[in-house]
Amino acid sequence: MENRPTRRTALLLGLSLAAVPATGFAVSRYAPHADAAVHHAVGLDDPAKKEIAMQLVCSAENSSLDWKAQYKYIEDIDDGRGYTAGIIGFCSGTGDMLDLVELYADRKPGNVLEKYLPALRAVDGSDSHEGLDPNYTGDWRTAAADSVFQQCQNDERDRVYFNPAVSRGKADGLRTLGQFCYYDAIVMHGDGDDPTSFGSIRQRALDTAEPPAQGGDETTYLNAFLDARVWAMKQEEAHSDTSRVDTAQRVFLRNGNFDLDTPLDWAVYGDPYHIG
Image (tube, rainbow, N blue to C red):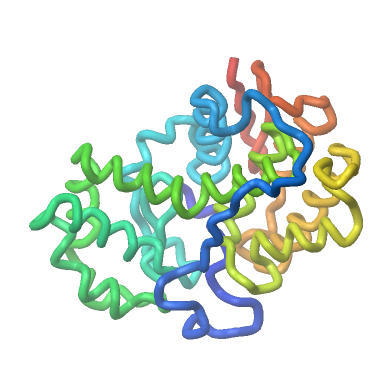
């Protein structure tokens, strides 16, 4: 992965890393509201659409469409979150990497990463590598060849990021594109309580527009959400390049492609991408 604008906002705005809960971002288990009147047969959780979502996020996070090649990815991109790794950018400083390695230890005791659990607990909430260097990155890549660890990454991605985003999108009456806008936001910003979290971004949108489930216009609401997302990204230098919104998500919205139907053409950081 290139050292480009990446990752959810683990650092609470104006607060220290110590303020981040040891378990990482608080994740609500969203369930569709009973009064949500809009239902769609195909959403982002459709297997074909989910594959598209993974490619779209990978283009922004890894400058590639090959998201399955990212299980082995690991580096410190000097963003204050320690090591960033895997298919969704699990971070040693934000709790989600710890949760992932704990899950791997539960499913495959004695694996190559289990010995790092004490160190991961100790560095959570900081950018420290203490107890991880010099062999953690190599052992991560070794683990990444294990199908059990790959499935752990898939499952934690879904539990922490994908499923909550899709459920909330459906509850708001959004089609596939809107659900993806939620997913990309929660990947980068997390679902905490700080002003740049996904929940706060959504609330800023709700302050100016109603979602379809409340009788609002979908285009108007998604533009409000993307406006709020861009504001949040600009609060942190590492996220200040907003092309993943401006030349990707807004392109699909302007085209009225609410179902993320292919072909799709977009650009991130000036690099063009295509899904046929």
